[in-house]
Length: 495
Image: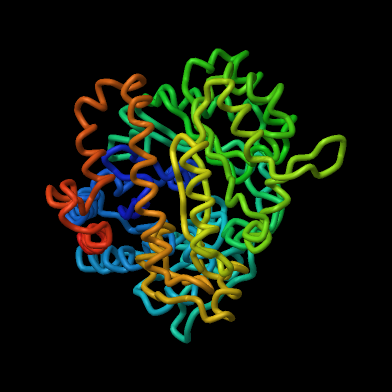
């Protein structure tokens, strides 16, 4: 069969397409795990976010797919609905499959769309078996993790247990299936690699544990190194390790760094997500090793510097420093110091706008980001389907916005007990855009060609809503913020 797999074009505010166009690793993994006789094409629509209709129309007409699959996050649900209607109009009889975080956690939202199948949680084996069942015309009831439409209504099969990656059931991704080009991270071609899946913590905002439970499984280093080589051979010079929590097993992560060095793959640059506690507690040896292995940016899950907020987010444990087995306080400053001393840059992941937040507590976190992080990735708590946070916000009546296309992490959709949602967002927006400017000299030194060509676009994106009048102090920041919000709404509509 001909199969077309699409990721959505909607982007996060912190990952604007002008600078970052990241591939969807799940789609190439799906492509690598179907039976060999299928012809699979992968299209990340972020690469054509201004030509979505034209691109989807061309691909459907050229490829004539019998099956079209869409990977969807919650804030992309509306866009997915529009693409589904377009595909239906272009090709009668096509089978539509949806998967990803949103269909997995809110399958009921797709029952009224013109969707045939929902793949819940991990998709590789489920999708492989689904294509076999479509070919055979039977056997759908035996596929774990699948929901499917029958004349009398939807059938939701039992969940499929998380895959044990150690058993090699999941095959390597197929990057040859990509039919669009242009994956970049600040001017350098980027790709994504997965070395493990899962996490054993229980953060209240996390969709991962709601999808697959609290567990941790790993690929062999042979598989990981082969995957890195494949990404490099496809042109990647920057590798983003997208593991849910790679520092959950620090000894394994250290061994992975050693394996990267031994394999001569340390000439690539790596971007990784990490826990503050792991870096703080092991940074003396881990941080220098990471730098030798080629790590340049570390997304540090700081979450919040105030203990009360960490308790609400259920993130205290992974942000606690330990000495001789005893808790000795917040690990963030020590983790940042280890990374900075080893010439790595901190992407600071913070969350502001929890129920108890006041103006002073939000400002404390923003000031911390100004002083210590190199690139801010500050978000607002967002009530994604089925997360514990969502129930708490709903029980307290703090959810102010039910427009899911605005559930992108940087639009405040919940209020605190002390501040309206719009004020929380305004405080973050006002502080964060100037923080980003401070990192521009580093980017200029590292990628001067990109900055010379695209730097003005990055600045224009960062300061959307500003004008000559605002630069001259002839209008208030609130007026600029209101204009920015209108621009952001128009961007969503355009996509």
